[in-house]
Length: 257
Image (cartoon, rainbow, N blue to C red; front, side, top):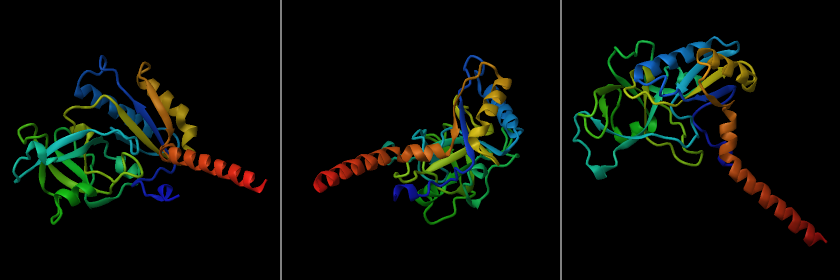
């Protein structure tokens, strides 16, 4: 009961999720994948009953993560044993609003954050508290990589609420988000979240049809309501509860006999 009451940091109500993995042979570079992802977002936004569409590299509670080192401007570059790392997430600008993840300070991504604009980054509250405990991180600059020479500097524009990515029982870890249009690597797998005004499962077929219309050979998988992620996370505990409860009932019955 306590686990089921833990706040995951996002709202799963009336949200449908889907995953895609563009073929590397057809989308071999960053530019082609970014263009494909943009088409998918635009197509899904036109579906009846869809009020908002977001994209993220790894869904909350999925247990998947991408650990990356980073360097803060004005601070000594970290040593190998300093454990200066974060969870790295690539998102679209409407990801936070679709899942009702609050912006605590600064701002989130906007339409103006493109590949031609200054590079920006959003961090979660856990990262802000750990690495900027006595100051406001908004406006500070950081570079993704073990050394500032690895990549360009990015300006922190906002701090968002913590989201539990590993499980409900594990504390949120420091996490940084970048807009997919400013992603230098463009990861091959992405997940989409759709806020709906109707029952999410009723749009599963429409989502598949829309993505097939963009690319008939593009595989779409794991099309399911976000509520299922929460249910799956507590499933092992629920099974143990039912098992122990059943054995207790049998013991009670034997004792009564």
